[in-house]
Amino acid sequence: MRTLTFTLILVMLLSGVALAKDVYVKGYAKQNGTYMESSHRTGPNTTRNDNYSTRGNVNSYTGQSGTKIPDPDGVGNNPYVDINKRQLPGYEN
Image (tube, rainbow, N blue to C red; front, top):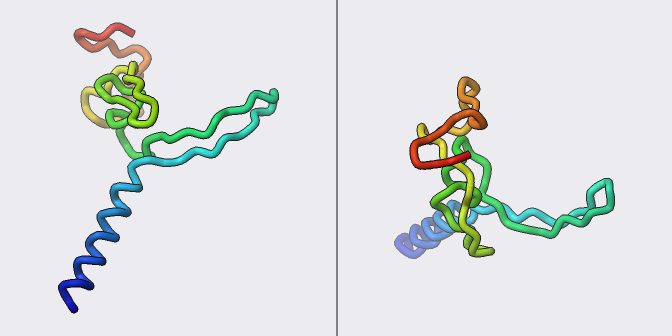
């Protein structure tokens, strides 16, 4: 009985971790009347390297490849780095 309880708790915890990676965004109407379709995005965190829009990643819902330059240090919220002015070798802005 203990093994079954432990297994169920472990499965529930691991399921929550997997589901926390993606966030569902409900469709909505903008102020100008444009309707924005519902979509999925990656969950918020401190890096942009795991976002669907980053080069090297593929959106599993749409199949589109990312186009944005990855963060070389893995930290996307660094206030001392202007990502719009950074040029990485092999990438063009």
